[in-house]
Image (cartoon, rainbow, N blue to C red; front, side):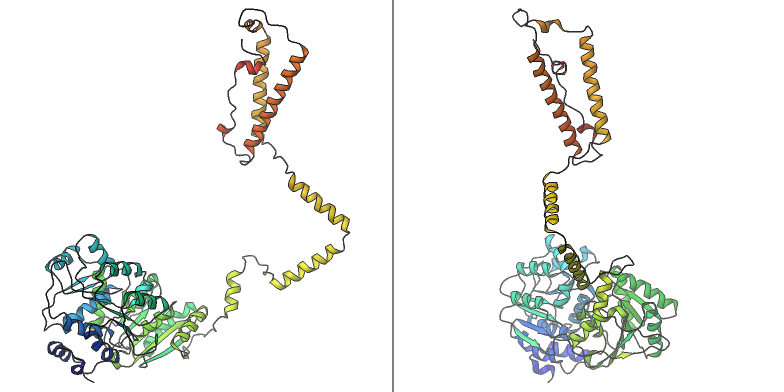
Length: 539
């Protein structure tokens, strides 16, 4: 089948012919007719099979008729990374050069002013990353009420990068009557649920088993010690016929370290990761495309959708943690029917990640040996779990069965005791639990108590030493107060005892709960009238 049999217009066919393509790929052959009919499409195909052209070519035909209005784009394409968005924009320029379609690229790291000017003139095709898209929408620079076609590309990568909440909000702002195209290289359950929510009676197109690797890529695995990984990579770079290659690391910090190491050993290498300024990322990627850079050390930001013709090798310096990323990484080579080679460097701790990858792709990765380097074996899962859960002490952790047998012997030893002894011990434990001991007062509390009692005694002595208030001997009407008998003195003594016990309880309660660190302001007693301190009554 040729492109002319798919129903595309003459302008698009001429642009495709100028680009050097004559036959469509399987995903293009199946998807383009349904997109031209206006159907929602759910496409799943392995990376490097031409998914981008399967929606850009029919979109150019669909948008060829009509005119965009200011700040109201007619179509929206959402991409997970800036590099992938820029590549889709380049495809529109290539295939749409015989159409007068306007396009705007909204990605981070670029000037807001230039992007706003394009939107104000009106655009037919809006290509954006979700973050910058929502920034401009919240500023009031975009109106989404005229969107006719929505494309969500690399949906599984959107899920990994945490863009799904933004995608859901964007979709809620679009017209309900629209055409939605949903493409992904893998189809996990979360992506399937999103597709069911966003698409209306979609046409499902699957041209290869989900998460399968291209048959044109030769894969190999080298198991080395962690400290030998750089030497192993340099050996492969020197022994393989490397024209150009992607070298993937799991962390941005490792990208910078490996980049400097390769430059130190005389390799022509560049670095690409998400923390670099957008201008540097664009310049580095363009230099790699032009051949000015032979080796591109990068993070997974370059693992999706970047189409560079003729990449001969892919090296996984780190085994990816997520098995789906392996499919996307090695998909940078062996594209458009060309052959490629992919090598992965694994350590003894990476056994579970390698097993997950082999389970996903449905086949084992051949293991090769590196000359001059020892090849360790993968660690068993039980050993990893035991080492992860082991205590820091030198004494080995006791197994569950051994611990249960030891407890059984202890129970048998207790069974030989007399029942009366065990019953007495049980009663004593219950009594101790029901009668908690009063916490001892701290030294500070006792010192404050003695000072308080000394102050009361000193005030009483001053009162008895000639500073007696004679007004207390008479009542309010002037009649003399009767003398106090023994009963009244005993009553006063009981009252003083109650006050003293209350003071002691207050001190104990203050200490309880704070220990020896009681704030000073909580130890102060309330001021009492002088009559209460001396035991008398005010007349």
